[in-house]
Image 1 (cartoon, rainbow, N blue to C red):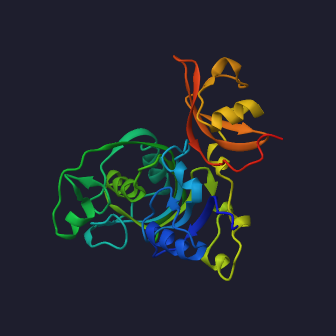
Image 2: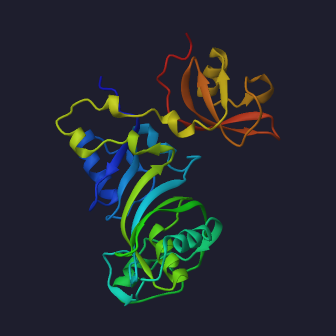
Image 3: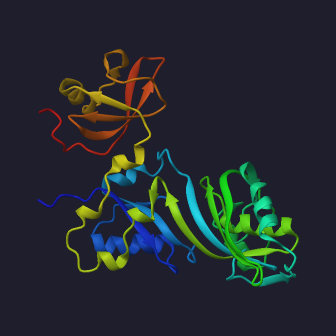
Length: 304
């Protein structure tokens, strides 16, 4: 009997692919429909796209680390309707007087918690309509600002003669990097647009964890490329069950918290038995019980 694939396949998404394109292609390669991704990347972007395969897809809505890291190229003096270089140029201004020190100083102003208005060319829905659908018809609507966190926005290099540079960004889920670049250009008084984007970090994974479609070619066994589901939850505290507790837990019994082995209560825990990751659970402090949340492994040797 063929074992169902389960785990995380970190893809280095190529430019020109949507996140859905990657999932569709992987369904054919891996011969399974149980695949989900952890967050969209624009077609012009490349980089880290963790793909959840098999039972791992159940983790999509409970991942504790949803922060992202990027390296973005930009050019000063140009503003476009899409806020990246693929769009229609709306304005052009000289950026000859802008120095690297000024750019770095203005980037710091974006760090911390702030609000960002999503761009019209985005998949955000307003009034039941995708913004990009309205934008393609020449319609612009008011968009509510969304709270984001930018932990780092720094200049990597800048060519004053060409008015081009690269930035490193670490931010919360839902942040639009091209909007950060666009808003930076407004603060500089000359406009700016994003020319390239590479996601370097997502959900705890980096480019070093990634594979490519070329590396998947002509393979029949992909198990060695799949990272274990528990990698998503490394920051969570563990609860270790005895064989008897494991039997009850996997049969849906809510366990007594006072009889469990763990240090300190948290909102969510990982559950382990016999050195094997089972899934995640939620302590109910009021009732004094441990409630099963998501189970990713029922096939392990839990009782030896």
